[in-house]
Length: 164
Image (cartoon, rainbow, N blue to C red; front, side, top):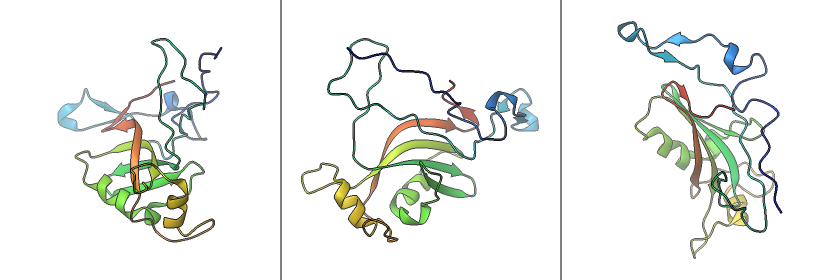
């Protein structure tokens, strides 16, 4: 019997300096004085799924496909795109195809939570091919063949879309 998911012990959004609810909010535009922006977080801890042999039953559950890739947060800002690993490393230069596609999205600001994958000839995600595309363990190459499988939009155009 599986247990229901636990709430995270820390805020999903926010930084070490201040919890999200204590941050000052800034106004969008003087012409729209009633609309407020949530500041875009510098870093977001991903909400990781638990691997189970079979999915639990009930409407309160959400499911996520296991893709066998690298978990990434894509930060889209007016000044460009940043691709951050779970550990906070900036890998924008290592995933130029994902960065280029993120720049083409019709949004001014967003944070996407997803996984970079490389597919084999049969259309299955292949972690070995992803590692090879990056130069193997400890490699420094760029992956031109990787794509991003998006799990969640955590921040969009001044609004945080998930609150714990």
